Length: 633
Image (cartoon, rainbow, N blue to C red; front, side, top):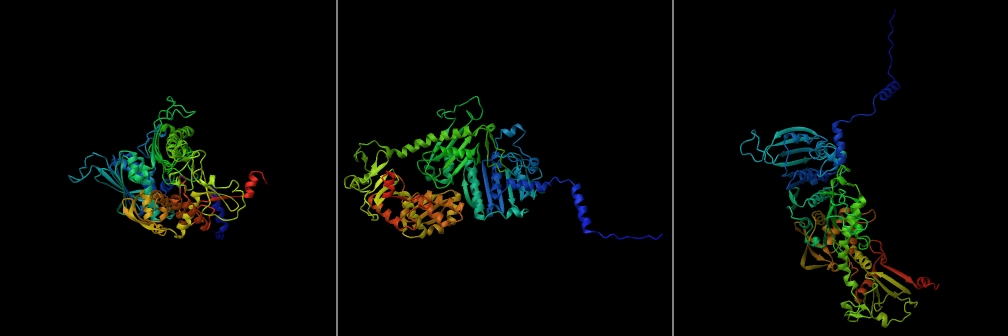
């Protein structure tokens, strides 16, 4: 028998068929490796260097620290080091805290619904370690140094643990009191995440914002921030929240705030009762706040902070309650400043709803909304009454004529008389010299300086001309004129101040103004760095001589941080913000000469009919319009 050897050549079709069969036989669901799971968890918790700073600071606060020091290099991309004088950890705990789902802040399932600490998920440290090179140095307070260390070594018994990409590389004894966590080369092993980081200045602003929020949440703890080995922020432990706000924002800012304290649900609120038998939303809820005083509202939401049980959060329910408290007071497009602290029974709030712990969920949102709104509304309305008192004086006092009160500057026979009732003011000549049918005459001439004008309320002006009636919002008109002058750098009449003005800002606002001050110089504002979060204003355009410079610079900093829309330049945004702050306010009554200047400036504007925010500056009612209103046509 002759053996025959048959060579079977492999076929690509056969290989494909075998591959498909094997894939069908293999399980489709796999258990991911630990390293990959840690990186996924890090993606939920750690978004940028500021996220690391937040997690480490909150761990320090939970460790009962009295002083916390934060150091960053290259906005945290190169180094983040957070050191504290808290209770620290022993060797065993130092190694356990690097494992996922390990925590000292939660013991059982029941504790999950009564969380009082800032951290609880047991994921922060292992998640950070998985995407960085970490060194953890810690030691228990009041513990003696180990025998292996030389006599007289500083600090107690401690340990140093080096971790790279989630893997422990080295463990050694190290004398320490408290805890220091050092993070280097964040996202070194996840380049896809690293490329999404912004510029150093942007990332640093986020770090400063986090430190500011945490410092506000615990005013009794000292905080210090060093960036690139330079002291950026130093906040010693304060005696009260007011003092901490003063440390961060300065005295002028604090003077513009009203303090409100509510120990329980106000009984005067209809439909609300203090149900002492119910835990959480009756006797166990308190609120303290600092809110905008008078009419010092802002163009942005830059200074709005919410803290629930000491935890800085963002919550739409509480934010909406604050805005509701200002109903009928807050102008359109304006925003209040507020620092809102709510303490509530932990059983009534779920803090385990967001990986980065930025949000909470209340058991009864409606009731806590009503509690906050009612508590703030009474204080806001009482403060508002102080502001509007000059507009509601009883008629018949000195300086009145025919029931209409003349402002001091109008008693000499000038135009501009303020009404006591109904918000009406008028020039004296409007009653004595003006013919009865003057408005109805089809005159076609333009505005004349000698024409009388009438105040309607405290913002609007009415005058006859151009064959009809023109209604002017003098705030919006002045805003348009200033906006175009600032944008073009024309008619600014910038002059040096005899006494330079000091303006204290928050650290983040101060940093961005220093970085962009050349842009403000082009608008006639010369600003120098005075240090310690303070600016020196040396020159100003004439139109800004009586403006709130702190409010202007704070609002400009917010605009720079927020950026611009797709169709506006940053110069346009800044000019609009500055113009809005410095333009005449509703409470100011224009005199004849000021009114003439306003009309002349408006006629020279490129877009005289709208303010920079799109609101109309003037509305013209023709004779035909008036006849239609009165059904004569």
